[in-house]
Amino acid sequence: MSLIAAPLAEGAGVRAAADPGVHLDAVHAALGGRPVLAGITLSVGAGEVIAVMGPSGSGKTTLLRVAAGLIEPDRGTRRGGERGVGYVFQDPRLLPWRTARQNVLFVLGRGARAEDRARADELLAGLGLADAADRYPAALSGGMRQRVAIARALIARPGLVLLDEPFAALDLARREQLVEELLAWLGRVGAAALWATHDPLEAARVADRVLVLPASPERGAPSVVQPEVPRPGRDDAAVAQTAHTLTRLLKGAPDDDRSQIAPATPGLGPLRRARPRGLRGRRR
Image 1 (cartoon, rainbow, N blue to C red):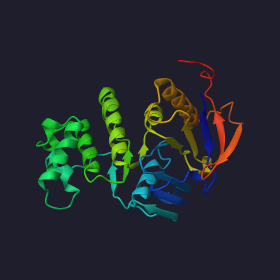
Image 2: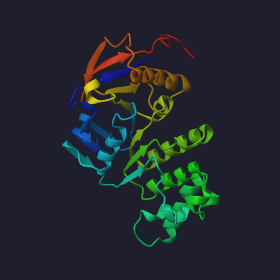
Image 3: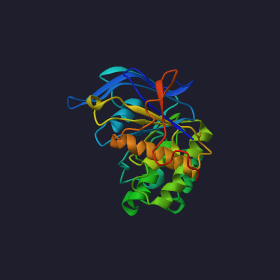
């Protein structure tokens, strides 16, 4: 079993996808005059999930905001999102004077129809909030408010879903259940997803590829880790192996297989095969 880890040169990126939910081309962005993204090229196709990792301040949220069209890049271009964009922020950002159901329906921007209310109730029930639809945010826990925010992002069946650490406020058991349900939903509707997370295990479980950002553009180029075992069907051993490689990349540790150059992949650049130390040749 092996992983593919590749440093991205400026202008290279995650491979182009047919029918992209979003495509970023050589995007540069700065915050307060400090560069945070430099030359990022990224395509996310229908049904694909790309996780985004990196240290705090590395530009994960900025990348999601550019992909959503909330901020314009300083250089480079963005296209896509024609099927709509759903965004799950780190903060739920619920309207305190509206119930959970009303918050979910608010993004539709029109008088709610019976079928809209039924879809909102279905989403809330799927997120474990069937009995909370008529409660106001003040009567919900932090994790419950975050689940309302997830339902709000999905209600319009967007073609692109952006998730900024969506499950950070949830307990482990609830998180694992909702991860599986969200992945199933994305697959059913064929939505593309960018999923920012600090958790290597979560990234290894949910993503088709993982984009790892450096602490700053001056510290090096982003890398892409692509698990050999596709999703779905990735077992715990494959998840653990991918998470191990991600942890090493985030810590800046060298990988003793990084010198093995594999053939180039269109849109991605030269690939370097990496097997995590301590897992090579083992079966679990």
